[in-house]
Image (cartoon, rainbow, N blue to C red):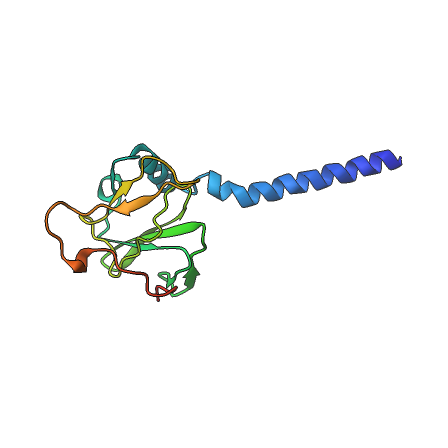
Length: 164
């Protein structure tokens, strides 16, 4: 009888560990939406090439804000959102209204360092995807359009640790 109790307790503990592990890891492994899935696939398919966000979005937007690790911002409801070190938040808006928010794990696309005051418009939201991963992350860099650009159009330094 004691052996059965120990086995039952061990089975319950293992089951709980598996369920807890799934709940913690599943959001990073499995996309949360069709847009999340297609965005991840687009990044992966563009290794060594340019990711043009205008071409991979299926909705109307005029501004992309990228919030990088350790920043915070207010969402459309005024709630403060903190970006943890493992993610970047991509916020697409149209005429000041948030259309889509993507919380992207940096292993799927590392936009760190790409915060830009004023965001990116459709024509400037182009990023070079590294051909090789550094560690576990797919690094992206801003891909300026050919020709002269002004200092006002380039990415800006992050304002401390806050996007507010």
